[in-house]
Length: 454
Ligand code: MG
Image (cartoon, protein in one colour):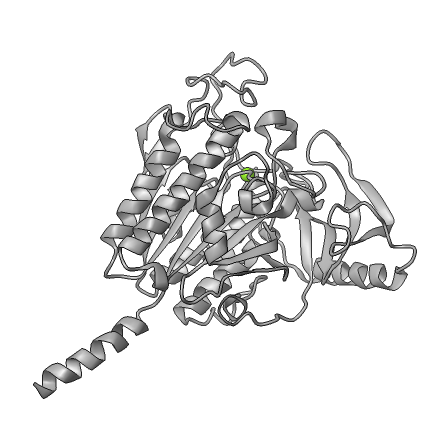
């Protein structure tokens, strides 16, 4: 009897000591203003709104780059993409990886998946990868035990003769792209049937969650949408006021609801940190298929706020007190946060650019001010410290070949002017100078990785 009692008292302690699970839900090209809880007047996202109401919503959450591949490299490594060579450079000027690119995320990089797997986590990648298709750069090469999804963007591998503008069409041809669907590195469908991708990713995610109940896990679900060409399952087609773009986002919302429900049903909600975000801002040149950055300036491809400030929601019922924070955070922080959650120290020789957000998430601590750098390719275009942001170069996302250079930086107060309309450099020269010096120090200290975008 005594032994049984001892066991009974030990079991809750053992359960409590189980490392927390981590789920990252990552949308593609979703704008800051595209969710109900972010103020969208047209797209209905009740599940994400509920997630935000039950969790912590960041008003000032940033992707670590203005386009896809560098943003994902930074998310998984906690490092600015320049360090891994996963960004455009003068030698390799393409902005993301393409189907014929030879590079990929180098093996020298430690990903959050590999770090957690070393701690006994089960790891799965579902959805878009876009970090390399050759040996050494694929999901299974970077710590994921399972992988199901597209190797790159859904608008790549266009069929020969596909009319120009098809990807931004409200009714794109289903057979317009030959992008493959891969399971554990092997092609299982080509072309991937895009209309049902979100549904199938979701089913795969729920299956992974429900079969990994007895082992800590890390799930990285990187949705294909709302990147153009825009597709949604039949149940969502034609249902949103915002057209097919809204249909696709509302299906992502449904997906999020399914995943949170699966965690609740499995009794895992209180021990799983779920983070929802987007890889960059809305692709505005796609018109109605391009989403909205709300009040923020510009979109995908630019270092104005609309290009990199994205939705950010953290959810862990019972651990995270519901609320909203305006403290800046970024995708760079997710790797150190994952290690903090698992109770693991990062390797001493690893330079991380992000920081552990668990004191903010779980204790609502005020984190010390630190600069955030807005890179476009290998160049620092802007820097934020506290509420201030200085631009050294500006360039719209697409269609402007060369940046405007600002000898005297443009200076905006993001608290009072999130739309970056009123340049205050003239009245606050010392602030502009401080931010310029921070960017200069960053330039001088970062050791670039070998360029990968060739
Ligand atoms: Mg993207």
